[in-house]
Image (cartoon, rainbow, N blue to C red):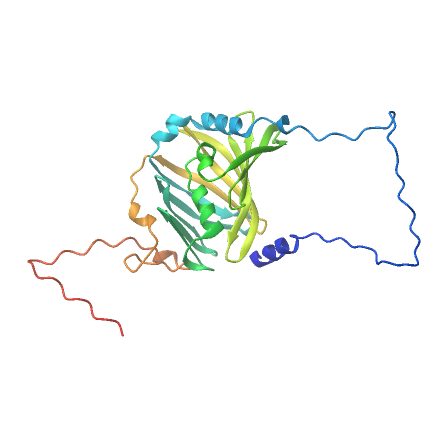
Length: 304
């Protein structure tokens, strides 16, 4: 299905128009020019660019609605637990996330779909899933994970995007909302939607990129609850065209103890899980004990 979405997107990148074949035997009449008349109805003018509230002002109000800049700066880490599932497919699993200073580690386990893991340590971002296995993310994939690891995107959107523009006004659940288009230098676009009754972010729309193509998704955030002075959406519904995923949080811990070792991409020293076997999720092994005395251990035998 991901391949299908990619092909559909590729097939819509160019618009073609047909032109009638030239025929010297067909007489062509000169163009008729109609002069304007004062009584003629004038075409509607394009709305001015400032018809909507400034995007920067709406984003700033969203930061205050969540808890304010000072509160955000006081959160150095967090730990989340919850359930994730596809109700229409009768699939339910677990999701857990650890975050600290912009780096993170996340595990999603859904029986029938497998295990999805991802992490970020500094500039290195990685992911592991049943289809593509373990890999380092680059390009637009890595870019998306960078802004997705933000504690609150409405607060630090300038770190990831060059411009913000209010592009539309609409109604969601009977309430007025504005769509704000965030554009990156790479050409990536993220649209965030802010409810003007609360100034909380209620939607995000963007294209998900993967080795198998790109696909549009929309994430709706609801059930905001206050945790230690900060409002957190406890429910998110992701419409990924091919599947609808629902995530509901049960545990939210701010400034929690976080094991940063799990942020790093798995290597020979960190077990790589079998993405189809939930029981295979390992932890970082303890460091090897130093040998007694001054004698150094023998060098490992070279692999043939």
